[in-house]
Length: 456
Image 1: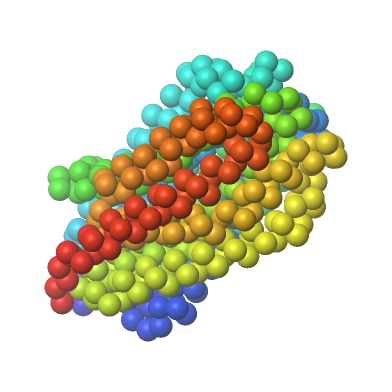
Image 2: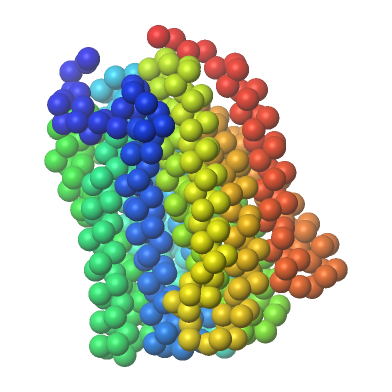
């Protein structure tokens, strides 16, 4: 083992990424990630729940109207973190300390810069973007305010997802969970303080999220500055390194675009939803929170897939690399079935978290039931994309997503939905687009994996 890989790093790899039972180790690795993903979702869900119950349905609709746009930018930052995870995991598998350190410092600069750019873009273009998706006149004022305030936290989100990518790459999924737990508790507390105590509305819940995001970012930076191994941060090393910048950008931007593309396609869907009455829009806003919960829980296994495949590929173990994909796919498919089933059984109770209006719940149940039976199918698409990323293939999977999930959905909105003009016909596009994209992604991955050369 080369110098720099201390006993602390060995301890953090206790999940056995390159050795032991993949079924057991990948599951144990993913559990803290699952909880972490849920806590990230709570930043937004807490905002919507508090304004929905204590500030009324108009405030609920205003915050809900920003969900797609926020998902676009936050999804890109999460994708950047995924790219960081893959590159750092690969170098850790190779046991090349210097490459790990250069990748870590380059990644921090890139992720922070991306967050700042998004902050400026969202703040300046808030109203035009919300108008583009046909946000209703009675909702747009509050939506613009919430969106601009939420954007102040974009740099923090970039930093946290960078740190989460680095720590999970070396096997430490526990500390990000602890930091998010602390930030999540603070977020909920501030929500209640600002809305109930200071009589604020969408501005209060947005500020609560921003402050919580910066808290989690600061905590994860403190951890990385205290690291003992090659992932340790140092002010003196903080710059873009030649040979690392382009590779991290290719992985990170491609992964970010894959996430953002779904949000872009969903802009057309949100625009179609906004063509219905306000009650339907508010019901959709409440029901859309199930998507965020389920997707983020399943995403934990996609991160595990990329991490396990990246390290095992770096270590030259072909059998463990492909098995990591199959195990992650099984787990993510199973969790999609489980959570979808729970939503079918307890849909009413879930929606009443966000609203007191029975009509809003009734409207939201239509979307909720369609999506509940569709989630598991998305595992075949997203886990295969993560697997392709794990072996360094990102460009073609992005193109496939653009065609299968973006172009197809737009065509569906202007053909099938335009003909039937029902919420059911609108949300049925998800399962059809996921199926088509999954088939293409799996074919591409199988072809590419057969060509990968493993050296021991």
